[in-house]
Length: 125
Image (tube, rainbow, N blue to C red):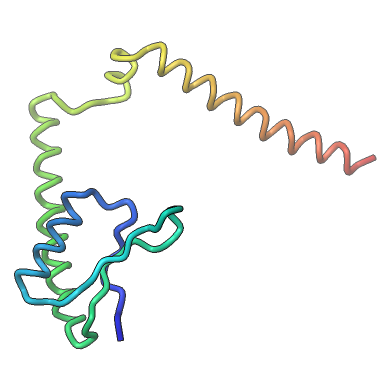
């Protein structure tokens, strides 16, 4: 019976490809399901053979540990070099867009809170 190994929703394409390559290199049989036409299905990697689950999980755990260490090292290098992007940098690059998004967020919050307050006042009548 097939068993779910790895969800692909929200996973970067390079990571998904690296995981598939890792499984192929270790002769672990799997198949991939897509999110479907409407994006409501589960995009994932499934194992054909449940007996390979523990081996595959160990490989994935080791891979994810290495990827995490690599990502943290890259971030630390960007911070050290002063090249990491901050909110202030985003504001400097696109001030009009930043202000527009801020106004939209404030408007949505205002409408949401106002709706709740109005409904509360209506129920007291």
